[in-house]
Image (cartoon, rainbow, N blue to C red; front, side, top):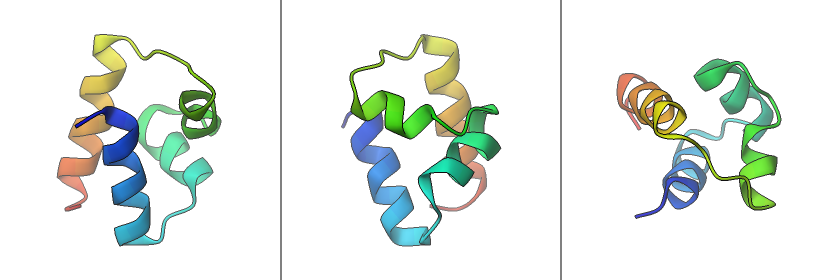
Amino acid sequence: MTLLIEIDRYLRVTGMPSTKFGRLAVGDPRLVGDLRRGRMPRDKMVAQVEAFMAGMGA
């Protein structure tokens, strides 16, 4: 599963706005929008996002 699909699922389940997710997960409120426009995250960012989602109980 791609990171963006995982994030979209998390946002749907939690009802969290995408800007809040980006800010809390990696300090970047534009993260989700940028990923939707083709931004390619580095491994470190993927790990941060996945850790955030795991820690918040997605």
